Structures are given as C-alpha cells and as structure tokens.
Length: 415
Image 1 (cartoon, helix red, strand yellow):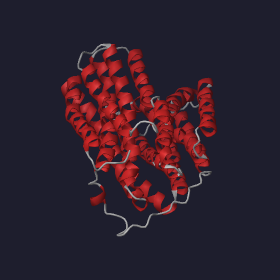
Image 2 (cartoon, rainbow, N blue to C red):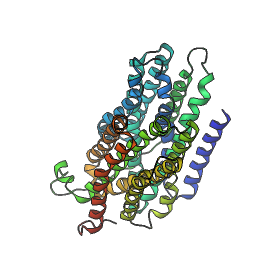
Image 3 (cartoon, one colour):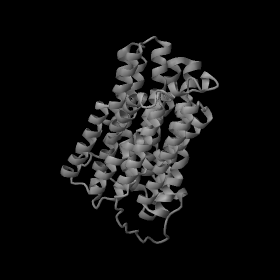
Image 4 (tube, rainbow, N blue to C red):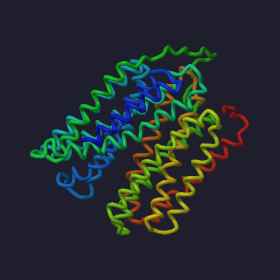
C-alpha cells in the first residue's frame, strides 16, 4: 500500500510542477492528473487478466480473450467518443465515457467473485470503452491551447501520464489481493478501478472547454474522402497506427517467446517488459523540451530508425540482452511515432472537421493494435519468434516510405 501511496504522491507532485512551470493552461494539468487514473485499468488487466481467467476459462487457449476484448472495446468506442464530444462537449462526453470504466469494474468484480468467464470478458470489453474517451483527452488538450506552438509540449505532457498508469494498475492489483482474499484473490482490484474511475470523473468535471471559433471556409467541411488524400493525414495516421500495431505485436509476443520458448526466467521476462514500458513513456520528458525546437519529421525519422533497430537486434539471437535492447528501442520508437502522428494530425483538418478526423484516426489506431495483439499469439505458435520478425518487414517498409514522403513532399509545409 505504501508504494501505491508514493506513486499517487509522485503523480500529484508532477501535476503541480506542470501547472507551475510548463506555461500550459490549467486544463492540461487537470487532464494530466485524470488520465492515468482511468487508463490504469489496461496495465492492470495485462498483469492479472491471465491469472484471473486461468481457473474460470473453459479452455487455456482463451485465457487472453478478455484482454483482447478490452482492446476491441477501445476500438469500437473511438468513433462514438469523438461524436459524443461534438454533440455534448468534451467535459460531458468524457464524464459519460469514464462511467463505463466504473460499470466495467463492477461487472469485473461480480464475475471474479462468481467465476463467470463470459461476464468477465464482457466487463473487460466495457472497460475498454473508457480507454477510447481517455485517448480523446489529447485532442481536448490541443483544443485548450491558444498558441499552436504549444501543441508538441501538450501532447508530450499527456503521453507522459502513461508511466503513472503503468505503475498504478499493477500495483493496485498487487496490494488489493488481501482486500477480499476470503472471497476471491483479485476481486478487490476491480473495486479499486471503480474508485479511480470516480476520481477521474470528479477531476474532469472541473475541465472548462474553451470556445473554439469554427473557421468559415467556402464549401464548408470537406468529406473524409478528400481529407484522407492529404499527405499530412496519411503520414499522421500511418505513423500512429503502425507504431502502435508493431509495438503491440512484438510486446505481446515477447513474454511468451522469452519464458515459454527460450526458457528465460519470469524475473528476467518481467524486467524486460518493465524496461520496455519505461522506454515507452520516459522519452516524453525529452519531447516536452525539444518538441517546439525540432521539426516533427525528425522525430518520425528517429522513431522509424528505432523500429528498424528492433528488427536487427532481435534477429541476432535469443539471449536476455537481445530481448532487452530490442524492447528498449521498441518503446522509444513507439513514443516518437505516436508523438509524430498526434502532432501532425491537427494539420490535416479544419476546426469543423476535427471530430470525424479524430474518430477515424483513433479507430484506425486501436483496430490495428487489437488485430496485432491477436495475431501475435497465432504467429508465435506457428512460426516462432522468427515469424514475428518476418511479419514486421512489410510494415517497416511502409514506415520508411512515409518517412521519405514527409521529407520530400514539397506540399507539406507544416513544420
């Protein structure tokens, strides 16, 4: 419990530092504090999902189904999340979306107590809805800015919350084991998820959405068929979607490959995954400072190089350091690619087009992530670790092509 208290204290201190020294509006610090409370459900499910379902699943082959359904829930809810934001406003839509996390937590609690696998899978799917609304917060942050030059800083700040979510979720699952141990070992974790969801809703209730002046352009909002043809949109959505998808593919396969196929200890496997999670979010400290000084295309270039490095290192062998270095580069590459996609996306739409473009963007990202996580187990089972690496090749080729496009297209004069 003490470690969980320290994590929350660090989150509050970080929020104060951002509010005091970043020069960003109050909205950003509110979102920074609220986002990891709701997104902590995902790493918690990664940590205990398989252990919870081990005894309740009808077959060992489906123990990871709830986690996959959680990702599917996020993908399914991305379009409704964006359109509810347009209809109800950011604050009301987000509060409504976060309430699905509380409902999912309640269902999860009931399912664990009774050993109901189907209900637990449904609970994970519903908890995934709240993740879609949490992802919309980065656009709420962008819309809170009066100066477009602050977009890289705001995006980096919101991405940094991931490291707190990654610590809160597993730690909550660990400390809550004894809360209801007489009933079910991990049931208490879902009580914790409900409490965190309520706190996140209370914080978001203080969010004040700025008035956005919708530009008046001849012809009004453009159809999506026209928007998606823009090079800047193509680069933005491919960078974010492929960055997320390839990260999910390799990360999901790594523990199975390390522990089951190549006999690394659980301790070493945990260390590699923890190092990967740190590498995903800590670079945001760098982009907060450098984002307004270095053009986005260079972050895109470095992120692509990092992913190529993952392939090269992972091909060298199956020793601990091969996995460790590959997963470190994977985390850094993901950060730079997701950052690049998020900061470039607003350049592809007008104010009156933002919600439908954001919806399409997030739906693409989380659909690709979900498919990648599902594919990882099948590819690894049939073609081993080498099959995972071969699967990466065509996607790496696409990443190289869009990076080149960002550098040479004379029409893309955005940064």
